[in-house]
Image (tube, rainbow, N blue to C red; front, side, top):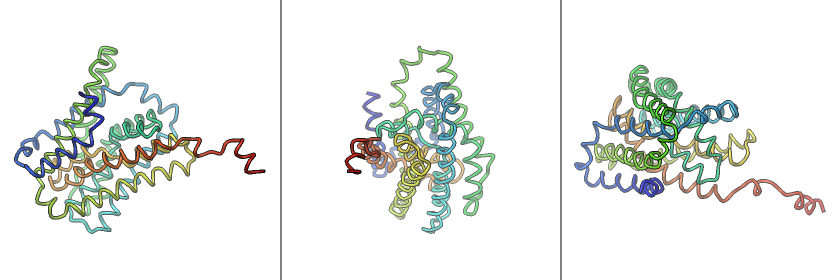
Length: 317
């Protein structure tokens, strides 16, 4: 059941987003529990991590550094540029920028695997960017979004520590202490994660049906551009730096996909539920785009990038 729900994650997000839009009264009750849901998801993420995920940083520090740096520069700056270009209202602009300033999401690891990319690199980059989030997300949001609305670095910092860092640390500690005994519970975690994200998206949509009717197409267009440009620039940067193809795929997906659930929780807690709409729509869209991009990328391998010696002889002849 858990595997099935995890593999069809995007369908459930879209389905419940539509249901929340049609019947908002059935989902608004979830709103007070958004932070709790994200904390449970992050605890599950911590249980799937191991110390070896962080040890990989020592084996390929350059690639991890570049992907995390790209994550925290390309996406925030793209978000800022789109907010200015489309003259977004303040609450929407802050929501878009907040999405851009969040770390990579765990969905990127699944999409990288489906794309036949370097999944270990993706997992490690997600872990590192998530651990850095308590400092970098508030700092970047303060720097880029304070022109629209007041931003409190300390309040965002405390929220991210509570929602992200503490649950991940607890999950990792449980994994280390219980060792092999925790393995039997890990297959259930996709189900828990899907329920959590679906709950967050449904709550945000249910509380913003009027705003989605009025400006949903504009927000969705901005979200699509933000995500797709992230894929393209991430892939181009990795290619320019001569990453191998599997690493290029990981970099592209890691940069393009954000932890939209975290962005929605932070926006709802510190700005408004309207500010959380871009994150909710991002959750819907990036599961669609991620699946398409992963399927497309899976068709390519190193052999397609290189010419074999026999083919070189033919060319010379």
